[in-house]
Image 1 (cartoon, rainbow, N blue to C red):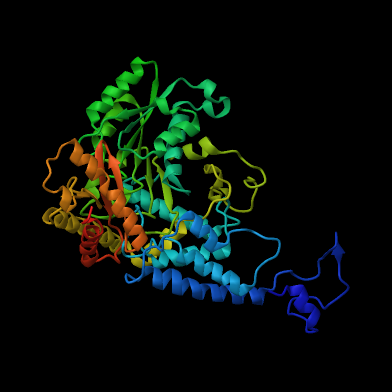
Image 2: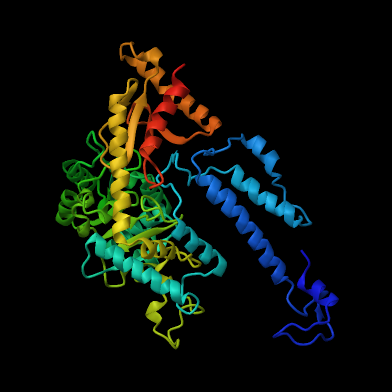
Length: 519
C-alpha cells in the first residue's frame, strides 16, 4: 500500500482542506508533511475485507451444509498460519488471505450445530453494532469522549434493573465478562462490610467468609483468590440432586464459619448453573441473608435471560431482593461477545465510592457539562468498550417481545430434545432440564446389556471423549461433555439460537450414534 506522502509526491493537485505543497519538515529523520496513511487505499482494503467477512464469516459460517470446524492440531495450524512476525509487511492480497485462513480454521460458533458453550448463533443487529464500535474506537469513561455510548449504557442498565424488579432503579456497569461481574460483587460486598479496607488494605479486615453452592461458577473462587479473601474462606454449600443450593445447609455453613472465628459478608446464589442449568432458590436464600445481614449476589450470567420471559421468569423468583446481579446478554440473548452487565440495587453511589481513584486528568469536576455522566470511575478498568451498544441496537431492532420469544423457543427446543433422548435406545437423560441445558449419556450397543456396575461406568466414562474427538475431526457439530459430581462423562447440550430447528436436534442424536456405535 502506497503511503500518502509517496502519493502526494507524484500528484501536483492540492487536496481539499490541505495546504499547498511546501518545503518538507523533517524531525529526527521523519518527514512530517501530510498524513502517512493513504486513506483511499485503507478504505479499499476495508471494503475488500468486508467482502471476505460477509462471504466466509457470515454466509458460510452459518450454513448448515458447511463444517462447524476444520480441525487441525496445534502443530499443523502453526504451519498453516505462518504466525511469525517479520520486519517488512506483506502485500494486500496476502493479508486478505490471512483473513480467510483465520476464518477458515476458526470454530464457527454462529453455525446452527454449535452447541458447545453458553453462547451461540449469529445476531445481525448486534454484529453491526460491534462493527460500529470497532470503527469508532471509543472508550467509555467520560461523556466528552463517548456521549452516545454513555447514554446508551445508562438506558440499557435502567431497563435491565426494571426487569430484575428494582422499581426505584439502582446502579451498574457493563464490564469484561461474567467473571468480572462476580468479582465486582465480592469487592462491593466486602467494601460495604469493611469500608476502611479500601485505604488500609487487608490488615484492616477480619477473616471474611463468603458462601456459595457447590455448583457455582469457578469465578467465585477466583475472585476470592484475586481479592485476597482466600479460597479457603469460600464456604461451599451442598446442593440437592438437581444442583440447587440447600438453604438449610447455607444456615449451617454460616454458623460453622462464625464458630471458626470468620466474619460472613456475602452469599452467592446461582441462577442457571453452567453444567446442569440449575436455579438456586433465591427467595429462601434471601431470607437467610436478611437474618444474618449478608450481601446477596445472584450470578444470573446464564439464567438471567429467563427474566425476559413471562413463562419462565419464575425461575428467578425473589431476584429483586438481591443486592447485586450479574447478567450476560451475550449468552441466551445472543448479543455479540462480550456483553456483561453488573447491576447493583444500591443508590448511594456505593459502586463509585468503592472503586473511585479520582484521576484528575479524566474526571475534572469543573467541566462545562454535568459530570455525573462521567461514569468511568465506577469501573476497575480505565479503557472500557461500550458493550451495552451491542445489546441496545439489537433490543431496539427486535423489541422485548421478540427477545422473549427467543427464550421461550430455546427452552421449548430443549424440552423436545429431552423427549427424544428418553425415547431413543442407547440414550439416557441425566435429569429433566430446567433450562436449556440437556445432559445425557450415549450408551453404545456393546454396553447396553451389561450390568451397571463399576466396570460399566468406567467403560461408559470413556465413550464421550472418543465421540467428541471424532465429532471435531468430522466437523459436523460441536457438543460438550464432562464428568460431574462423581458421574461418568456425559454430554451437555446447550440450545440457544433461533437458527436451530427440530431437524438439528434429531441430527445431533443421529450423529452421536453414528460416531459411537462401534465403541
